[in-house]
Structures are given as C-alpha cells and as structure tokens.
Figure 1 (cartoon, one colour):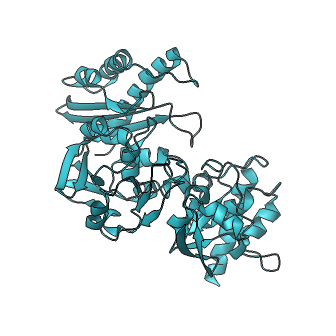
Figure 2: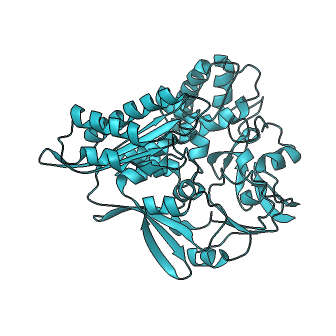
Figure 3: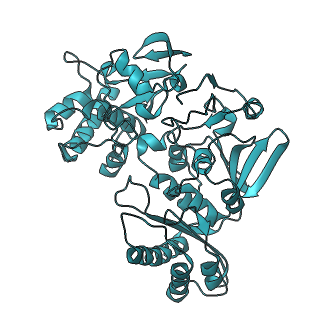
Length: 276
Length: 158
C-alpha cells in the first residue's frame, strides 16, 4: 500500500465494478491478506466495505446464497447453513480475523491453506462474478483453476457464492498444529446417497496441495458403493495415490500420506453423520 | 496523503495519513498507549480494538480503511476510580501478569459477553482465541470472564 494515492469506497456494486478498470487498482474486502502488502504498483484501493448488498445470507428453496462480503463470523452464527460450511468458517484464523475475513476474500486470495474453498468444492458451489458486461456464474472448481492467486482487480468482481439444493451431505475436517494455525491439510467430502448406494461423491483437498482441488479418483471409488468403512477405505487409498503433497517444512512426506488417508475417512464419516 | 476522519473513544479526529499507515500505528501516534504492537502481522492480538463494536486486529486495518468509523479501546472501558467489571474481575482473579496483552483481551472479552451474556468455557475460549498471552496460561482469564459476565448480568438487572 506504499504508493496508494486514492481510496475509493463505492456505495453500489455497479459503482465498484465501474472502478475495476482503473489501472493498478486493488480490491479490498476484509483486508487481512492485503493491508500489509508493500506492492509498489498498487495506486488505487477499491474498498468494498460499504456494499450492503453483498453482506447478506439468503436461504431459499432452490439455493443458499452467500454475499461476497459475508464474514466468517456471520457464517459461524447463521442458522440453516450446512454444518460443513459452519465448520470451515470456524476453522479459519481466530475470532478477530473471522470478524473481518469475507467469503469473497477467501476465494480471491487463493492461498493454498484457505479453508472455505475446500468445503465449497465438496458442496458443488458456484461463484458469481460481476463485470460491466454482466453477471456470470461458474463452478468453483473452474473458478479456482482460472483465477489462482489474483489480488489485483481484473475487471470482474466476486459478488456471491451459491450452493444449489438439494444439498449433499458434506463433512469438513481441518488439521493444523493449533486451532488458530494455518491448515497442514484440510479435506471435505460430499455425498448423495439414495437407497443405500452412493450416487454422487465429491472429495476435495486443500493446504497439502498448492491449490485446493477435487480428487476424481476418490470420487469414482465411492460412486455405486454402499457408504461405510469399506468404501471409505478405498476412497482414502485413492486420495493417497492421486494426491502429490507439496513439500512442507512442518511435516514429512510419510506423515502427509497418513494424514490424507485418515482425514479422508474422517471427512466421509462426518458427511454421513451430517444433516443435509 | 489520504484525508481521514474517525472517532476514537468518543473523540473525532481529522487528519491526513500516509496510505500504508495502519490503524494500530495511528492509534499509538495519537497517544492511545493501551493498544500494543506485538507481532504487527495479525497473529498475537495485542492490538485488538473494537471497530464499530466489532473486535478486530488494528494492525491489519489501514487507517484509511477505518475512516468514517468509530474505534473503542480499553481507555473507554473504565479507569482506576471506576473500573469496568471486567477490569475488576481480571485483577481479582490474578489474570494479569505483565499486562501487555490484557487491554485487547478485555475488549475481546467485552465483545464475547455481548454475544454470550452467560458464556460457557468453550465460548470464552473461542472468544479469546485471537489473543496470545505468554504469562498466564489463560486459566485465570477464563475464570475472570465468567465472573465478570455474572456481575454484568446482575448490573443489567438492577
């Protein structure tokens, strides 16, 4: 922020979007990831704090809609949200950080230890982007692949995340050295079970990989099977085989493999116990 | 320079600041000495303040970002003659040793009691999870918050 000349606090999303083409501008949400930035190129800060239209959680028969400026504390306290979403929000940082960290910020920042994207991947969430040419909705997996680590404004603003109903049963687990530390590994699993058979599965992993992603090999190992120890063990093995852990000075490779295995089983068990 | 205007403990200040000035450095520059710079990067919590009543870490808020808002620090909580129930409870419980982390911890405690007037130990632990204390081990602080919450509830009824 050393060379910032202008702070803009737009009152509407339309106004915010119109500022995005300002050269060398940076979008500011909760700010925990960017306020200490010493990037000399940032000249204009677009502060989203006044955008009330992005601060609400809307529950309807079709979907759950989270405005991009909804904080982790709001998610933590809201009723009617899937338990895995609340667990992921709770897993992030500490209370004063959760009070400011936003849904949009968790997605825009794209750091490998982010918690929320992992849970959202297992929920099949959709990210809403608004630009001057209109609104587009893209699956979160595509969003993460297309927009890794992008803090400078690029003409599009994350305005919401939507989770369609019917909801899958989702389990979220974080593993870290302490409760407030960054995750060493986080893992989420989403299941749709009908007549005792898994019809659809989503397994997502983060922190132990450079960017949160789904593990299709594990999902294939689950679909068609009965939910339970046997299928979960197969899925866990598939995760270990498919996921190449990033080097981590805190833990060795063998430990990471064992983590992947137990966290996959734990996330799947949590999912089967969760309310939809 | 960026022009800002904010309310600190009931007093409105107007000034021009450099763009990378944090709310923490601004508060210390204008003499609010209770707010401490520990790590300066959002870990330790010694810089915690209430921004429009919400407990935040002032080292991760830019002064320009806080413009138009109100900041509350422990200076507005109470003083030696008229201590806040939280301050009394922290002293009585022996929850204060070196004191460096305590001003912001009191604000975290105030905020958590507002959310949970009869907090459980679990709720207190969560509410204080952004504040590192390297002296006490937290046990006495949890006790102090429980005591203060009970006193505050009683005072509310009076």
